[in-house]
Image 1 (cartoon, helix red, strand yellow):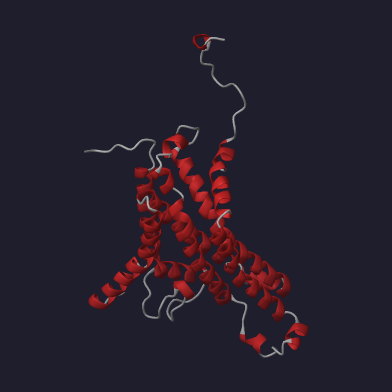
Image 2 (cartoon, rainbow, N blue to C red; image 1 turned 180 degrees about the vertical axis):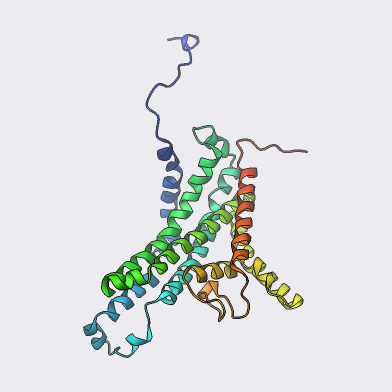
Length: 301
């Protein structure tokens, strides 16, 4: 058939579902990450601490195991309570930060550097769906590291301890779930925003570290110079630690938190201020993504 006799015909076949289309982005992104040996080793290593916690919970409910290891007295020193699970979330949250620093910068910056964003948006993808697809990569990985093992350990303790313990400590499960999601969404939004604005992956990862550590150090300097504690509004780990403490039902007056999210005694700020500060940061990240994720970039000379 001659070329001039061919005419355009609309596709009349079956369309892929919206959510099925959306899962294409994280599926291929996770496959690429799986080929990275460093990522595989690091991701598997993040489950070491939950395994140790599971062993502690099991041994505490097994008198024979305590006798074998001569740990009858040591078993009494470790209490399976809100502080135990908060320490677990603190350690896993710190590892989640390092994983997001490695994975996050490579999500959007390669598409922008290679002018591939228009190819995504030329297909049945909206800008919001593109961002949700990239967000799904980080959310999936960080969930597997934080609240999923946390809730599994909570269920293990509840199964060994009994229904009464589970009902009396239901707030711990809520703290694990909601506390992890606050941290996951903040990390994912911040990593994607930096990835969209900085096309070089190492620089974007360095900026993510700077956002936490440099901003926290600057806030501490403000506290010293101005003799105040409001500089902690710039310290994201302090904000998360304060929110986690309230979610787990702990007292703030004596200092609390865990590992990376420690709140020092006498340095507490109101919880509503922490929520407001994190909400403003999340809104700024969404604005940066909305401004940068476009099918075509206009360069003004």
